[in-house]
Image (tube, rainbow, N blue to C red; front, side, top):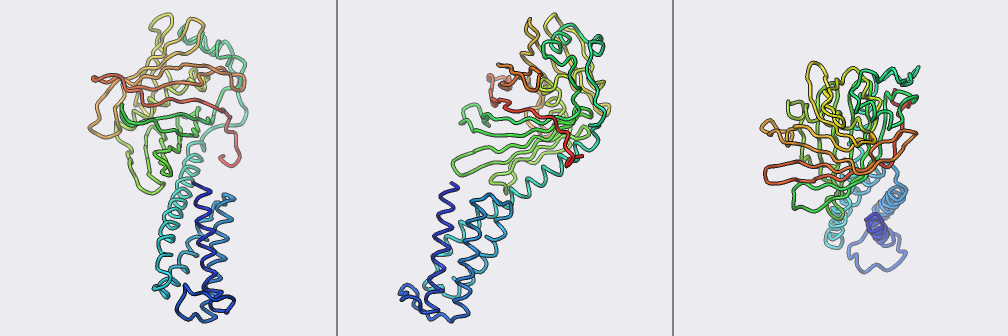
Length: 367
């Protein structure tokens, strides 16, 4: 798509040279029947330059390329209206460029929102004077959880306060709908439970969805926009979305096992290879059951979660199966998993996910 759109920009830019050539008698331009003065011809040339700059900045992924596009579009459409009889078909190209530019502006605004919210999530995290996990820290935990933490190799490791994950995978919205590939970045405050998850989903060729899921101070928020512009989902701060975001945080401590020893989680032994975890934020609690292999690898998480974030959503069983494990920065975590709803009509596997990178987020720009 990028190369195709760049080609359209270049061709559209070049066509504006016809008005310049006509005005300054540089060539015989039969496609333009009206006379063009030299000042107006200069505007045709200026528009060519602006579209050329737009093309160059777009190709180089310059963040504000759409600003040049908007200025060029305004000048271009004014000239087209002045010479409508000969130039009216240029409006079609301007409409296409406007749609793509508006989408780019929407992406810029979305990215700024994610940056702002990520800073907000991390602002209370203490990143100085890190502590390290000892065997004493896990003595109070159920045997299955102790075995998991030992097997994860967190003993002797620094206790995570913040962490960021890079993810890839595929998702779908209905049991029989097509899989859509996605990439995502998720940033956690491990000390004070919170996260921002932002994703880009290829809904169909040339059409992308941007999504953001958030937990901050016990409140959830889910936002999905089509083509960076059109809100498809925007649910926030109700019981269903809040508990769903909390359950998600609880399940995802599998990626930063040191969180298991924090006071906001209470553990209860169920069996030799399973334990119930309860997460409490501001007197609101959610629970789920973790299961482990005999070696101590975490294998699944299951909880009752609202199927959707609307006020009329019903509780259903939500299950994550961890299918592969990998070591990142010395800590062994599940790197591949699939997520399903266990519905009355059958299991709905809606997400397959892989962790491809794990980084601590001790970043001065976010402090």
